[in-house]
Image (cartoon, rainbow, N blue to C red; front, top):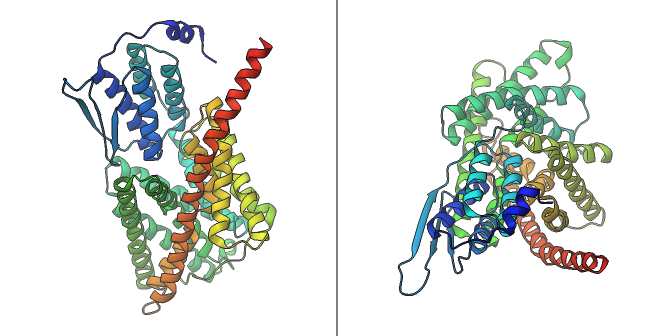
Length: 447
């Protein structure tokens, strides 16, 4: 609902604003949304909503992952107005994204351009909704949530959280010093491997807490935290939406990050061997946890992710709900003997449709809810297994053939999830528009 100030602004007529100022406002909003992880197609749609609200028709917007350009030609006798903005990575803040979506909604209702520009400055300069250490704890909680999918051993969960927290603090330190992602991934994967080696050594030395613990799941929880599975899904979604340059850039970044993880695992195993604390981690599949624990893990994974990106309470709760819906769809599809890739596609499609129905009223970041919903589905474990099969846990034990099959399956799952998310959003939008029209007519009759 609009406030009194918003209603006053909506009643104010918009007088032919400067086209360059309109393009600049749209691209600044688009910059924030693209940096937060929104798909290129949705970024373009939101920029066009802003430009159309101020009377600019026929605007051409191009997104290339690191830059946004927009061009508008008032008429055939005048030169076009073109603006370009470089996209710079920033901390993902879903609370800020939600405020930006509200701002776009107010612009569509008639908010004057100067007031919209001032509101954008306030939104961008506002602090995060809670301290950074809370977000660090949320990101560290991703590891034990992943481990909970495969074990209920509380020691494994505690150690996964502790190692994830150490790695997260280290990554934050690297980020402040602008260390390239490849080297961040390399060092983080190496540290996780060495932590697992230390746990194995302590168990062999008879330390009671560590006796009998399999460090494999600790490595899995940490590595999945580093794997860019969600980024791969986003790349697939951009490719489906025909933003090939953005999709190619994201795929290349995935390969670089994954290459850093491979180098870190190999280096960690070699260093552990040199230090006399050899580590044996398994590339074989794990037995799943009981169904109740896996549902809890899916919800917890979404909650931890939402906290790590500074989401507000409403977004956190909706993220958990969408993750549970997606996991329930996946579980039911598996029960009906649906193949792996179609099962993941269905599990991504249903939450995406539901998100399209609720996002308009709540102004929550829809892409954030979809990301949280597919997090338990992303093929992080399959990528991990494929990497271990490729490099081997011991010298000369690599199996490229098995690794190729595993990684190909992981790619198929990523494509399926991306396709399901895109199709669900595509199908959900006209349904949401129809529901809104029916609701609006009912209110008019009641009035």
